[in-house]
Length: 160
Image (cartoon, rainbow, N blue to C red; front, side, top):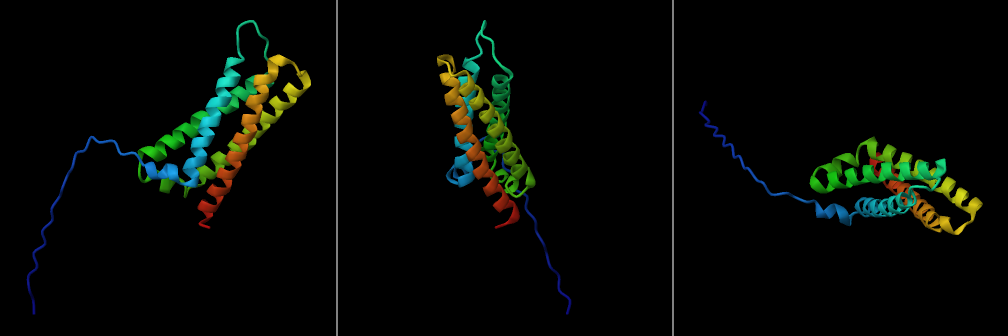
């Protein structure tokens, strides 16, 4: 009862130069939050960076705020770009602990930077600090968005 079997394999290779954008990621809660975090980060960096003019003395809280929001704006941009550029990245990276740690650390540092700037603006209470008040409020909203992302990342990591 022996019989012969012929197995044929075929290899197909395609070379595509098309850039695939994962637009479905922007429609998820993680994508929406990352986009809003990036937008608020750009606003915070724009306002805080505009306040650094030659001849004006700035305190360490201004520098700390600008440093923190710039750091996490760039990090969020890289995360969002990688999730948009690859179809598999969004599903893989959300299951790792990296996203949970990133958003938790971003929440803590952006919150502390925004609160210290808000306290400094409240102490000085002059008209030149009105824009920094707006930047610190945007930073507080951004830290709330990072908290929401931390909760979503925790639920995704645990598989809830």
